Image 1 (cartoon, rainbow, N blue to C red):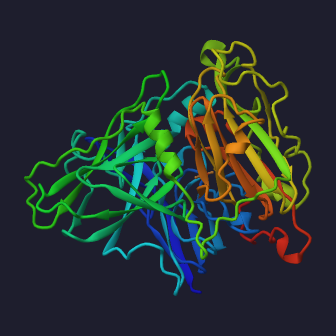
Image 2 (image 1 turned 90 degrees about the horizontal axis):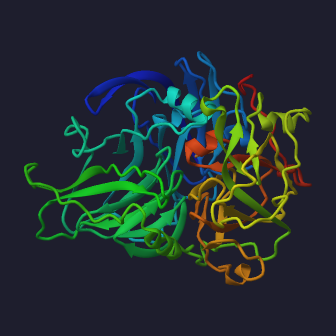
Image 3 (image 1 turned 135 degrees about the vertical axis):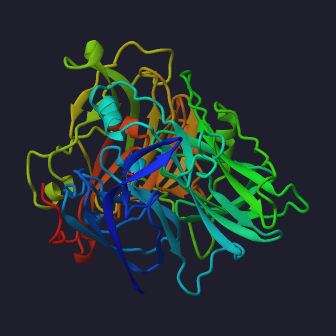
Length: 537
Ligand code: C2O
């Protein structure tokens, strides 16, 4: 195994998009940031030096960080932020995972511009279970704001009012020619006829689940969240913030028009104004002149729930001899968390109320020091471990507009989980305020998505329909609008692991909590000691 070293300089740089230039926070002056290339088994050492006037921390989204939460990155959960003028070295091993993941800032909304891809090559002698592509390409889907993202956070997080929508969606940081002044801010991928390409697609958008399609071409899904899947061919993808999807693309349009749009546009099946701006990039056959007008792909309609449900059903773990799906069959700990949006009194806010978001009616309050430190050093008074396993009062979660139970309580409340226990968590969307889908991300683990459905979860009937053979294994899952999702994992990674909605807006409103997974009995089942340069608070 090799050691892969990277230097990440956090710098503010002027970037121009949509006819305006504005200063944005970047890594090494690049937007999107550099790609981390590793081979399974490597050790990665990233020295992050913060030259910007913002606190910073970087999360390696989807890497398990076994016993090593110190390298996980969410600010105030596993570390205090890296302050201006300081450095911190993220030092971790990449084992047992291969495929596409990504990294991003994990403090406030800075991940709007501070993000990049992680490519994990399989180790020697373990080729991927699909044909070798001629070349591969990273496709980072994102959002762009004219305004200052920090101000938006304040609006969204502190005042509790919805911030304005982004001004564009982007592909590799570029909105594409459907936006003003964006001809030159268009990502172009050149292909040769008859060749096969691997696209590593990442949704790094702050607040939108996205559909993605390429005109004239189908895609074959082969891996999600750094786990191989049973391959299936599709005309469009659905990808939630935090998720990654690798697809094979055959350049088989022969003879073809030669230029095809790739496009990304939000999926949102809620009765609210929907952002339907489309980001585009160009798939260009070699030798075709730039004057040929590209063709737009068919994307599912923004509220196409049917497509979303049937797409997600097609996702299956490969579950081969070499890559078995070890789905926990017996469950030691059953959890049921409701997801709610609501209103809380707020004397200093506009309208004297503010929007909140909660799990089991508890809106998470960020601590002042890292929870992992508090756990490791037994510091009391920082968090409690009394997060309830189920809501106090069961109700008709997805029934007609609910007028009660809108008020949530606040707290830094976590759930304690015994080492190596098997956990099942049912995430139930509710109609508190309004139903909406929520991409949930768990740090430190992959989990199996064993079941999902619309309406209220029925503990008497639904578990019988679980897929316990080859369910998709991932780190982020979309809980459907007005529905539920059941996940399972074995708690074999000790530490403090954040779990939250990957829509930044909802995270800001408190849609988050964390698990404290206790140390195991053996010496190699305990949280490692913290690194010397762990940032102080
Ligand atoms: Cu990609 Cu806690 O996030």
